[in-house]
Image 1 (cartoon, rainbow, N blue to C red):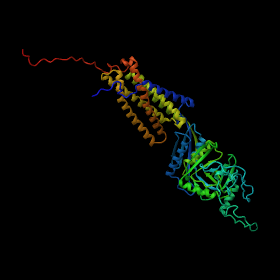
Image 2 (image 1 turned 45 degrees about the vertical axis):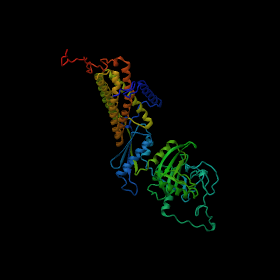
Image 3 (image 1 turned 60 degrees about the vertical axis):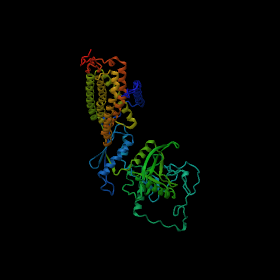
Image 4 (image 1 turned 90 degrees about the horizontal axis):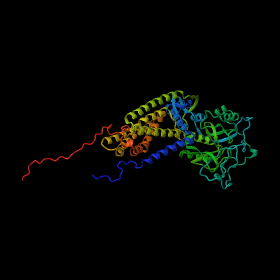
Length: 591
């Protein structure tokens, strides 16, 4: 058997332990510095520890759908609500059903509860309807007069093709509306205009004979009812805004209210049948347009939605204001009424007086889909952390007792080696605390009771890794080796055992996180995090520290009786002296 080459590291351990210790020190200082720089010096707590808001929602039957409240729709609603709340950057929220028609939403403290209440219960039924009439949102004094749009009062957001060029070649269009601000919405930019023929039958296609003015036919009862409701509608009153358009099918005309671009003035609309639905929107999101310095909502349509959107815009571009606009109606309210002067398809954007919060909120609602049911808020209560605090106190006491027992065992059994174990536990604890604190503002991680339990369980996992390594070193010493060779020869076998053990723990945490929901995921996440940190601490701290202590100190290097590595205490027998015995000749020599 060939001897190993001189200077070759048989163990594969790092030859410069000082570098490993310096690296982990830099990591700890960087994490601590980031924690203090961000102003978050304590971990974010879950609802069971910090309290929060609990919202109770009751499902309502839709008109014409008496059997809509079922398990499938309720589960779908729970899934959508979870994605909406988590889309706000909230973690550790709880959304669960209660009974057959109730959903409970628990949101930790520190979240915008008002915004959360609006999002979780919003049905988000989105329709694209043609604007037939629009005027100010107050009741019309004379019901006999048809309201005439005022083309210069307020503005509305635009619907644009995001890939279209900016304003260029103004005036190229010959049969499109003016691009000035109107009460029906600011027209799309001139770059989106295209010359189109004046359609037959549209306004201005043929001058009527003033001598032969026909008498308009009397409206049918449904139209008369819709007109009367439009005339009497007062959009400044919340009750009337909520009631407007209730019970109207998507295939029927309706009335609705919407805010002007100033965000204060209400307008009211008569809208045609729905041309597109929310299911035709593939995804949406609020983004900031750096070129125009404004917030907008980008929408991407499905293939079928893109075809329908293209046909709708092709039809609307031939109309005169306000009938060249389509109202984007969300839960009965017009959130935007852009005008159309060209055919759009695929992608579109909504611009207007959006703030970052309002743009991202609308994009969040549209992106995560429509709720299959209508929900009514039954109650909103504030959850106090009293019960969770008591449980946390009991858990911390139990953890402290367990840690004390581990320390006592290490001191009694390993003596001087307990210093290495305790320092390693301290480093692991600092890393865990700083990372959990930083994960709060970055990914919304919240520390709840199960997560605390996972951190306590991790103490045993970390201590087990130290014990494996220490026992391997002691085995090498029992075989007659001195400490320095024993530290290096024990590392490969200990490293293999530690990695296998930690891999099993990490695999369990990943599976548990994938198949569970709610608070149990907090336990799995913490368990997985601390398992990974155990590997980091053992490789970058425990092993390099043992190498330095064995090489630089007489206390450990010479096997002091209190070092935990005393050969006599480990039962090492001094080697026996063997002398060479000369066997006597079996036959006498002849003379």
